[in-house]
Image 1 (spheres, rainbow, N blue to C red):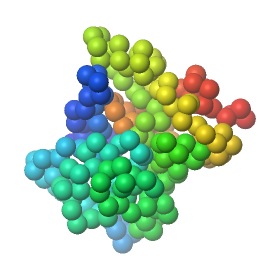
Image 2 (cartoon, rainbow, N blue to C red):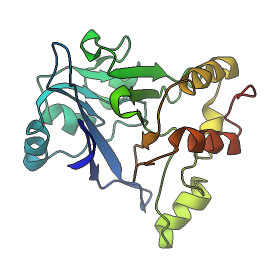
Image 3 (cartoon, rainbow, N blue to C red):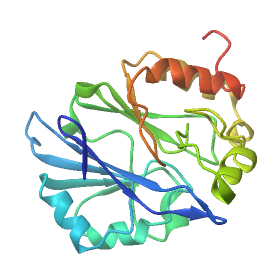
Image 4 (cartoon, one colour):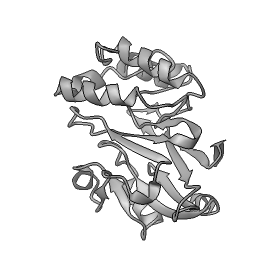
Length: 231
């Protein structure tokens, strides 16, 4: 586990798509206040082995398992098998795709209080991405809204830059604008997201954006025509 900030960790797992290495980032949030203090939110699933479970449970008591968008179900069954007794939260439609039973992400559990906020990016029924804010550390946690890949060569570099269209750090994928089916609903969600107070962004694949995250997100969305005009 890599400590990112107080009560916030990530762990990286291998994940390839069509031979291009993408990686999968699992984020662990430990609640610090209220009746659920010490409980963990495990954001995203990975190919968890016994050692991974031991690392996570050493941080606190697992409270919730989360997958925050459709198409992120690669390790859903492994995640559920590793943490079989806690609520598994995911977007509508995820359970059908993943073949595991889940509960809705919204409304967010009351035990999360003001520490963790959740926002559905509306207007994108093919993605149903939900973004998280860990308010105490000003950290935004996303799945595929933006990517922050290292520069690399070979097939992986070609796949990221020319097939996915991810050429900046961070950047949105070429596919994402095509998933917007209701522009007004999408713009309303992004406008609300950009009122949130965040500096760091933990992405679903590869390394976090450590600082200036809000402005870099704004620029990434603008490059792909995904930023509301009023912003």
